[in-house]
Length: 61
Image (cartoon, helix red, strand yellow):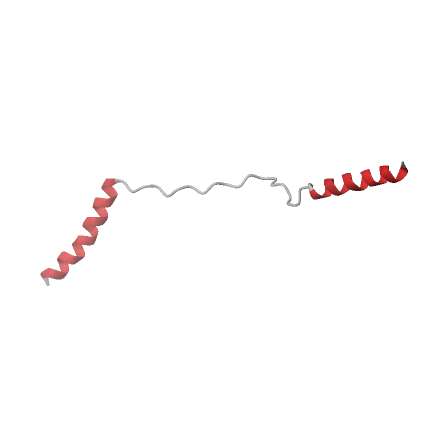
């Protein structure tokens, strides 16, 4: 009977160790990365005009 109890303890101990958590739990939540904001139409137009101005200056010379 004593051998049976020791066997049960060994099996249960092994199962507990196998199922134990191996990685530490995260204590603080990780911040999520924010998606970049989309450009507004006015910003796009301003960039386009700024890019077009140097080209116009080059052709006039």
